[in-house]
Image (cartoon, rainbow, N blue to C red; front, side, top):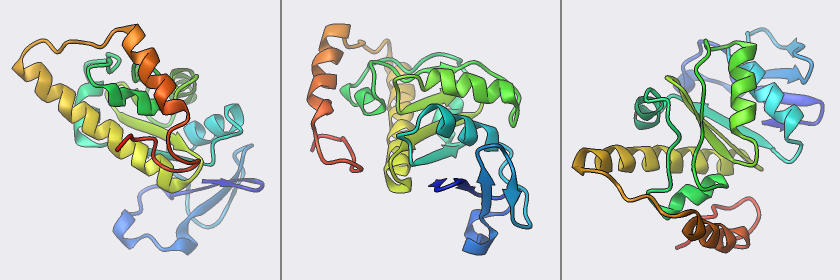
Length: 187
C-alpha cells in the first residue's frame, strides 16, 4: 500500500501465512528499501503504478488460478457480463507478456491500467488497484470470479458480448454507485 514517502510491500519468498507485520518492506518510490528482507520481485509494478496514478492507495497482485489460466490466452477479458465494469471499462485488458520482475512487465501493466482499475498480465495473473487494500483485494477477487465465469462460458459455446452502448450504460450506473473505497458492485 501507499505510504507517506513511498510504499509498503510484501517481501520476496516469505509465505503469507507466516508473514509478520515487521517483515513488510518499506520502499521509496525511487526503489530504496528499508528493512532486512528483499521486496517482492514485482516491486517495479507497484512503484510505477503509484507514480502514474496518485489516486491509488493500494495494489493487489496475485496469481489466481482462473485469471492466470485465462491470461495465458493473451486476450482481453470482454464484456460477457456487465460486472466487467468494476474494472472501469468495457473490457479487462491483458498486458503483453514480459518476464516477471522486469521493467518491461511494469511498463506493460501501467499501460494496461490506463483508465482502468484492474488488468491481467499475460501468462501471469492479476493486478488490481484501489484506494485501500480492501478495495483492491475485493476487485482482484471479482476479476478472478469473472475469469472463472468466462472460462466456463467458453466451454459451453460462444458467449454473447455486450455492446459498447450497453457497457456505456452500465459504466454510467457504476460511476455513482456505492461510496468511496467500497465495492462498486450493484446488489
